[in-house]
Image 1 (tube, rainbow, N blue to C red):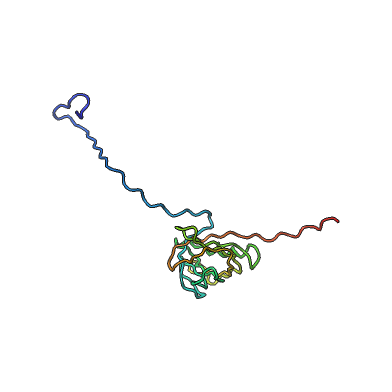
Image 2: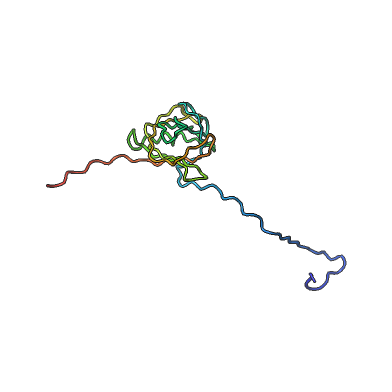
Length: 173
């Protein structure tokens, strides 16, 4: 007994709705962790170590085998999505002092325990425009135990260091 109400007459239009149900599908994989600040960008890590343009959307260190010992960071002016960050990267030199302008954290977006944290200084524009690149002097601040692999997707975040304040007045004796 699937009908309610009166039976339809001949030539009467009917509207029929069908609903099919089945078993629920499997749960999908968890997505990547979200970025935690607007100064976080997506890049591709390169195993090359030379002081040259890493290529659009790429970054690299001067030391691939022991990344926590790297002293230079080379980064393209455009991130993996093609956003031109040349003005942003150039602005880093306006913070702190020459040897200590920002902190940079490079992290694996799937495994947040895999990261390198460096103090950034001596910002140097190597080539301008969207196809250009920057180099930064870096000093290890903290690093996890592992290294990134060639072509890994990484998040890079910058935290700017403010200038040192003026010395206060001498207290009374």
